[in-house]
Length: 306
Image (cartoon, rainbow, N blue to C red; front, top):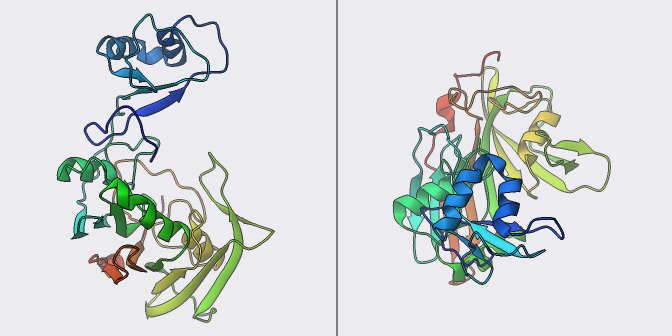
């Protein structure tokens, strides 16, 4: 996380804006009002309160001259959000790590329309940990083990473990039983996701996504699978299960995009980050964390037509 002249406030990082290379604006405030006309009154208020600052920490005033390519920092007002009615459970906490059991429907960190209703902001506020940062991410719809770093000095070491794929991850999923498929099996493909497009897709080319799929048990038409991703592409497990013809139950994106209301929490994605295991970069000891959630409780609550 890049250093900023403004601290985390109420669990939220300040926003950083880069001024354009050129323009007809006389002052920074003129540019901000032109870029965000619907927030003009609040921007003037924030400038008057000294809450908009330059990269060196000096306050922007209503007369501060526009300077091309400079950075400006400010706190944006979070959008109105639907409350996600599920708690984040703490699995482990020490001087370096906070490990939690994330519920379905709660985003890992602010993105798009989800800002305060995210695991990161909730935990920063509830535990008074302004420097808390995710070591990796889980999709908003995926529940399970999620690792955060508590202090900046530990952040890089743990994030590198995940970035360099030195973490053993194990997931569980509920999906249709497949009598025509043999398990275990490995799915290998190239997955790409375009910005602004909801679905990721498999395309021809060099393989960049590998998943091992194991069958744990079958109950009538529904089966429980163990999923072991060897790589970490966006939506990888969801895409690979769909490519096998057994899309994960409750998935609103695969095989087809479904329009689900933000306040509809009735059908979670039946995907759980069950276990995480790695060698601790500071102590060298083997660390192991497991979710306490029971995905099987949803086995007989299969999604109906949308």
